Length: 151
Image (cartoon, rainbow, N blue to C red; front, side):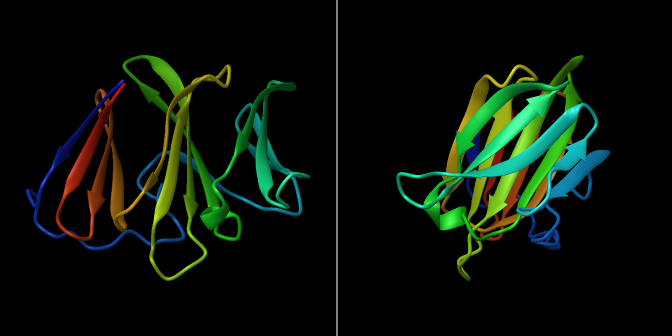
């Protein structure tokens, strides 16, 4: 896993709908809090965390729980989205959550099908667009900066 930031290197692109970061991906879904949501062999649902009244995202793959991930508190009330992608012949699960505020921040997580975490971070800039590349994903920020995550 390698990340690389580039400052103001790309022309400002039209903003991807904040409610659909994975619109350019073949397989994607919005995860609903009140009902389990499916994407291929994955099933997503929320579990309340007793310690801070927050939420954990629980993911099952082919019926086996593979992931129980805490979503940072700034993103509890925002929209959660998932995409299943194939990069360099391997499958990965991407999760993105919007902040509940007008800051347009995003939390992004990248996981293997067995639930092992490759990347998870709260991004401080507003994301305009996420695109799949041959070796990972690229994020384009409203500031003109970009970030490439190589898997």
